[in-house]
Amino acid sequence: MKHNMKLHPEYFNEIKSGERDLEYRLNDEKRRKLELGDVIIFKNSKNLEDTFEVRVVGLLKYENFFDMFDDLYERHFKGKYNNMYKSSEEVAESMKEIYKEEDILKYGGLAIKFKLI
Image 1 (cartoon, rainbow, N blue to C red):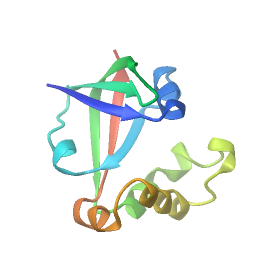
Image 2: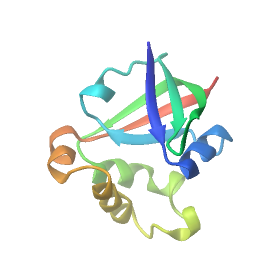
Image 3: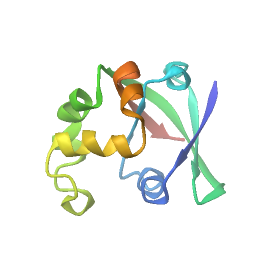
């Protein structure tokens, strides 16, 4: 199955270049349809014609964003993004800029592991 997801240009470019192999999302109804082997078409949110595809190779489900980023902080965030995030808590808090707190509590987090196609 194929899925479409938009990404901010910075994250779009990181994934497209192979620098990053995880995407973090709310584990809502749309994301719960993802299965291993599915294809995601990532679209640059500033230019929807700019796309690339990845194959899902892992789905890491978490009760909440705090647990997710506590688990993934050292490998995926510490010392990156110009040291913007000093802790896993800061990364989790930043997700409230994207998602409503009630949805975060309802659905939890999902880290999607993939390989470029």
